[in-house]
Length: 233
Image (cartoon, rainbow, N blue to C red; front, side):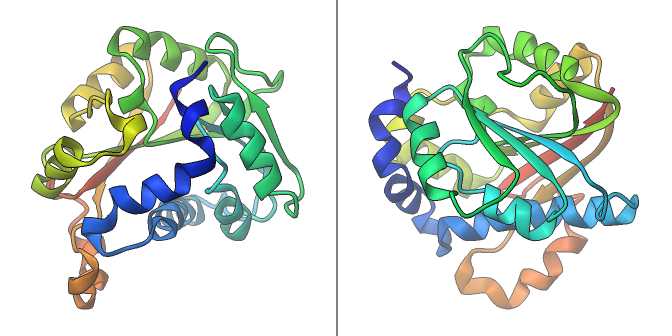
């Protein structure tokens, strides 16, 4: 049984507690990722395309409504190692069209086609380091030659992120090991990905929301609570 199976029904409740220090609700973090991705895809002329998307490590499916909101023409395939999370995700996203959820057995991506885009939203800190390169190689094999992979992670360089990681009681994060931006770069590079961009995000908590418009000017600063890589083959 995957560790997330035990907490699938209370996943959202646990996430609320985990991000409480920020003053934001979980949906803020789910949506900001799609805002970032949409801005980049708009820049390169992909935002209106009919894109095939793999959401690897989809959890209980909290990102899918935002993927559809910002990329309505997309076809989404979402997978997770937790069968219970997949069950919850299917139930929660019944109103969405062209979205498919399937269980990932830890060995093979359960979709035959290759993808224009792969999303990995805060997943790799749950994966044992000895398995990370192998999984990235598998994902590389599912990415089209001109495709893009977006990998988001929590940033242990940020003091608040590190404090939350050490002190929270988010039970399925108990054995998580955060990836530094340098480490993430190394495993992506060693897998053969071309590194196009790294951006740092989430600099201000809710009580400093007046300064949120400034975050787009700080994406170069390695102190954001999150970071993400954009890579390709």
